[in-house]
Image (cartoon, rainbow, N blue to C red; front, top):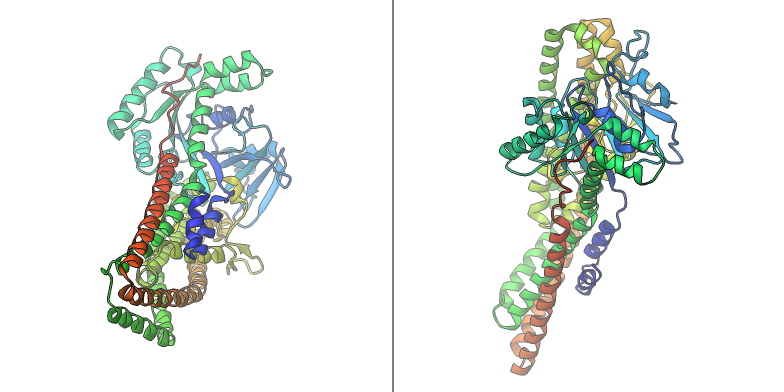
Amino acid sequence: MPRQPKVLRAYKLDAIAELAERKLSDDRQVRSVVVVGEVKRGKSSLVNALVGRRDLTPVGVDVTSTIPVAVTPSTAENPPGQVHLLFADHTRQVNAAELVDWATVDGRHVVDPQVESLPTRAVLPITGSALGEVTVVDTPGVGGLDPASAQLAVSSARQACVVVMVCDASTPLTAPEMAFIKDAGSSVDALIVAVTKTDKNIRRWKAVVADNQRLLREHLHREVTVLGVSSVRAVIAAEMPPGPQREHTEHLCGITALRTEIRARLHVAAHLPARDALRTTVEGLRTVHAQITAELAVVEGRGASVPDLTAELDRLGELKDHQRQWEQYLTRDLTMIRGRAIEDLDRRLDEIRDRWTTRINKQGMEVLRRHPQKFAADMLTDLQLAMADTLAGYLTALHDEVVAPRLDSPIVWGEIRDQILDALSDRRIEAHQVASKRQGLFDPSMLTMGVMGSSVIGGMIGLSTVIGVGAVVGTVWVGVNLGFRAMRSGKTNLLIWLRETLGTTKIATTRLLDQAMAQARPEIVLRYREHLRVSIEQLQQQITTTQHAATADAATREKNVQRLTQNAAIVDKRIAEADTLLACLTGPSTPAGFGGEPA
């Protein structure tokens, strides 16, 4: 993209050129694979097979996981052999062998009534993963398919995600599995269906794969990659010495085809920063083209007259003179948007309170105590979604009612939005339930964990205008640890905890809105001042050009027309080049094929 920024700078659009180059050089993209499926489908075994490590995540006939576990490349700060347990208000590091005690239904600490708090997710660093620098997330078996997981692969320029849906080879897709895939298929392109346990269904698995392909084609009206895999034989192959026999075994068990398909999907997503940069560049080039077209119209005598331009110049001058008055109206508008956002938050929290009160009364304490981590994760998800949706609505209103009418530029809005989100990422709150503890709203470890099941909402919001909000509230502490204690103290205490936790969530969200408003106001004021200054300069230039055109001879006018026409053609060519490259980078990946050849 070397020629496009050069054109932008030639027309004094340096800020847009620099923004595009920053987006192109962004190397913070997270690459993850989220493995989802019904209970006892072999999700954990498939995770172990994908990375090529036996018993890395807890597996077994009677083993059911209770929290998401992210298997991630190790770093100097996160060495292998340790597991990071993420509680609501702290992180604990234990030996990797202890993961089963914290992350399964019958785990020693999970069933211990003396343990006051349990983790809601875990990070397991390893070296030598067969998938390379990719985070693989094993979602919990408790609760079956979480509908929220259907949106986990919504990608942004900093996130590349593949969802692997696991079913087994004993039967075609069930109704809940098909419903999940239909839901996911509407928003997730990088979706793969893995048919596991082919080693136990040697005669039947190929027919099941074919049935699944047919069912998916009928229900989704598009092709979804379906691959047969034997996780058991994949792990055996991973323990063989490198060589032809190992490669042959991995090919036969289907793991090679699955890894290849995952890499292909991630490769397409790796172009997301470049696509983002190209879109920014094209927007800038269209601005340049509009400037050239306007000047050409003036030279040819088709533009606005000098009196019309002078009247517009006077109007902009009046806006500049009355800027102090405009800033007062801006404060009023921002306050009104904040008030509506808080009203929306109240409505969402009331819905959560009613839903969870009904659930507690209907299911009873025994059910909740049986799976406390699932309860805590679901509650945390609901609260985080309420916060995220409220912030999303606030930013949408800010754009539609304040920014767009005055600064009709998606690039400017993107910069304002990013400034707000960056400020919120560093925001800290103090919850009244714990007097002396402070926890940052944004947990940097999430960037190394990828997407973490129902506890993380970075990809769940479903609002393209606010990509990034999920990261801001992704790990907000809302007193979940006290929820474990309340579950053991009886229904009354649990309902009291629910009420107090909803209050804490409102306080935290209100503070976020206040911070967003404080950040937004100066950004909008400064950019509007700059907008007026640039607009006045451009109008003055247009008036000068119009006056010169009126007095220029035919030869000079013809020369200017040729120059501007040539410049417009050059810009058109650069836009076409960028659009062509964007189409190439946006194109779908070539499927690796359907089915595998598991032995």
